Image 1 (cartoon, rainbow, N blue to C red):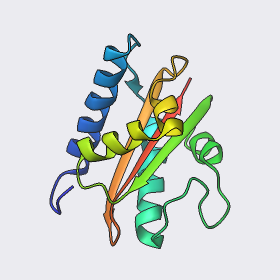
Image 2 (cartoon, rainbow, N blue to C red):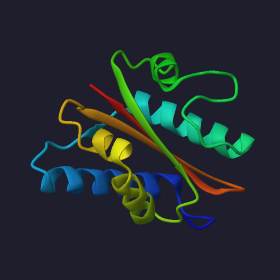
Image 3 (cartoon, one colour):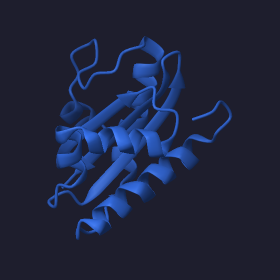
Image 4 (cartoon, helix red, strand yellow):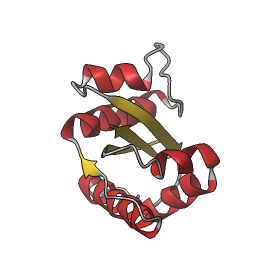
Length: 131
């Protein structure tokens, strides 16, 4: 993600890539949920501001706690990444990781929220999944 790239454009590209991967695997599309997107964007901003890339933030807040606090009733899982410059690059990295790939291809998930924020370590990416 280059400086000046609209956040929503990168997020929309990731959503399209996620749904392409799922389509090729014979799975249904994930719908974007605004509550999950808010949780994902806030986590990406937090990671960029404090320069960390973890599921649990330095204050001990977990993905489920973040998604619940955003008002999402049935949180599922989270993927995070740092430094991949494009939506394609971050998707390639997630698909190469068994745990991240399993989240992307989980047939039980119905919704997703995607957040990206540019920081010192490059783009900080978050995907939040819900049932």
